[in-house]
Image (cartoon, rainbow, N blue to C red; front, side, top):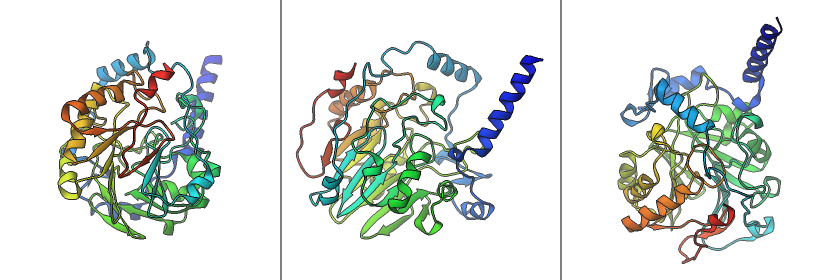
Amino acid sequence: MFIGGFILLLAVAIFLFLNLSPEFGASPSKSQWEVFKKSENYRDGVFINNGDVKMNMGFNDMMKSLKGFFGPQPNSMPGKNVTVQSIDSLEIVHYRGATRLIWFGHSAFLLQIEGKQILIDPMFGAVPAPASFLGSRRFSANLPIEVEKLPKIDAVILSHDHYDHLDYGSIQLLKDKVGMFYVPLGVGSHLEEWGIESNRIVELDWWQEIDFEGLNLKCAPAQHFSGRGLADRGKTLWSSWVIQSRNENIFFSGDSGYGPHFKEIGEKYGPFDFAMMECGQYNELWKEIHMMPEETAQAGIDVRAETIMPIHWGAFKLAMHPWTEPVERLSKKAKALQIHMIAPRIGESIVLGKVQSFDVDWWTEFN
């Protein structure tokens, strides 16, 4: 009787959490589905990858993944808190120098370009999950600047709706100081559910572009998937982004497995002065949706980037590999392929067009 009652209570709690928690956002409306049908990437009610590439994990692979994730994982997290470089709010406001980026760890950036403040995938929360008990905490106790101290943000660019890229708590703190949100198709439904007016949201399909106050924003392909709940996989689109000013051409990969789309992007929009390339949270079991570090280096070649920077690492544990392995493997392959790679500390300024030296192997301080 007691066990049956407990199971019933647990089931009710899960049902209420899934249906009432704002973290899950909202599914696109039927009117939006009619718009999606015009997309070459939309089929049978869901978005698809080029070539219909999917994560091919069967039951045995799933069990192997779970066993690996909950088993011993040497060095999958830092041995101590990762310290970050701080930046002052006034220093951000008064900056008038060359285009620069500030990395917040994982895939989050502040981009300062032509007098504008742009946030890319601003996941500033402690845990990349709908509840704190469902994920491991951020490797660093602090951010380069607390969200509340950020100045007015001209635009936010989002790559997809996974929790480590689109964070409900971060959006709540940001939404009243952000001008515009640029997102792939369908992701705006989450933002509207969270109180952001539709006229501040622009949704784009792959290969669509828009002018934003002199900047050209281009939504480009990625090889991944989407979803925040149990039944919304593929209901919104995922993407990479190109950001072009009068003088710079910047690429942000979002999350992506390796594929021919990188060369296509390079041929259509390259060469790039700087490319933020996914490198982390990978495994051979799901290589279709997350690149191996060696593939990241090749993808940098494919998009015709002058300089690449590994992202999607250094902040969270979402896979079983040692936490520093992504940057170490990528560094080795980048040297072999003769492509320039940088790996700044979290919070360190990256000034485009300026020769900078970054601390070599800074991550070894935290093992």
